[in-house]
Image 1: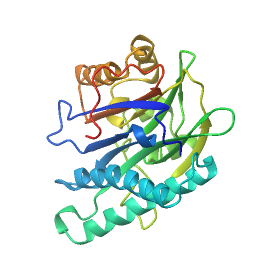
Image 2: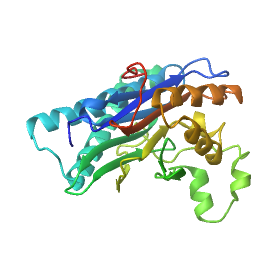
Image 3: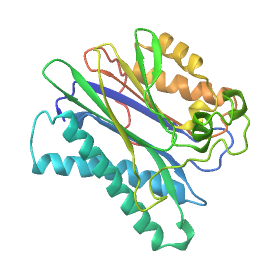
Image 4: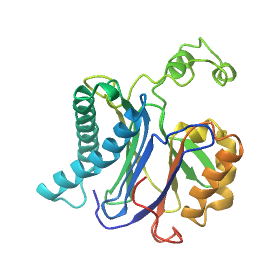
Length: 269
């Protein structure tokens, strides 16, 4: 991991207009080129606890490993391995926490994490995720989804048992098949992507994608690309204006030389 702040992110979380509790969380660690977003699941405060453990534990685990084995930059394969270890460690801590408190038993969280490194030619984004929180790339005015949901609906789509139109109203559309705290192993998906200097990355909980389609997200990013922090506020305001059916959390990442953040963003939420 390149610890110089070549890329910078801004994040924002909001309870929305329907839910009574915000069970989303995020962390922005620009100095370590690491960004994490989690969407908690579970009754009472369980989801909130699980999500917070995820966004605290993953950066801490990676910082400790980098400190004990300094290498600048870490290769992408080594960073992939490190992210998997960090997510599995967070999974273990969430399950241990739940096992000691009956009120949060069964809690879990989705997670998506991005860490930056570089090879001789260009920067690379290593993306790990479990669940249906997503990572998008915005390149040359075009939005691309860089993660594939771990969800029941995605599995049925792959098997052609359901159409994309049917997914929108299916009663099981929010059932995830992977996450932290659900099973003894999280089994995250991890991939590495090469980056262009003008790329923007978007991490989001499903509170955003419930309310905005991918074309709507793309159009908003076209309008707001000059200011990352303003973009996060516009995403949240738009999701709430359209109904705010869930907590909405977004993290937007851009090259430090191009990214305008306005005021320094909060580091977690």
